[in-house]
Image (cartoon, rainbow, N blue to C red; front, side, top):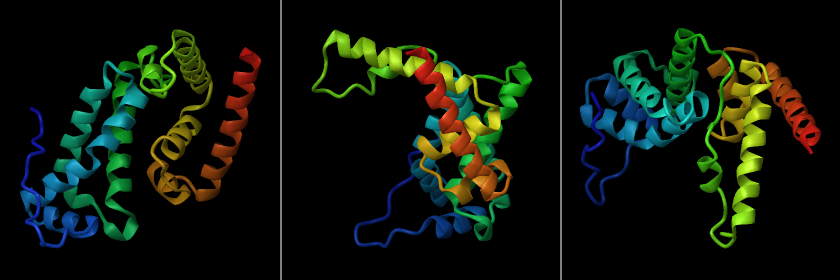
Length: 198
């Protein structure tokens, strides 16, 4: 079952509700508020699931995460953080559950070279640059697989999703200092792994 993201937008001149207000209304059963929240955060959820599960399973993982968010909306507590952080935590946990069920613990980022093609600037369409970008993306994906799962998750949440130390700490259920340590050590390991490749 695909979730519908087609709720109507607020009328012109009508003030837009904040994320906390939308979440409160969604918890009270307002389907339009829930749809607005899902629309606002769907791209981040899809991106996270794509990075954790890979291109073939990312869309299905995102759909399951969105369904879980809908079922568990009443557990969101704005006093503990933003709706975005909570939703990404739910998505991350959904992806981890899928990986556990499959018996895989060491998978991250896109496995295909086409992902690199989407990040090549338009003004450099030459085949040499495209091949180089694919090699770099492949090298980064390979280097990321060498990191422990929690460290890799912290790197992805910080650098791909732009989450703060506090948001990552809440998502991974660890102290902020641990997140900072994982990010520092993770960057050093990635740099060393990439330099070793040449």
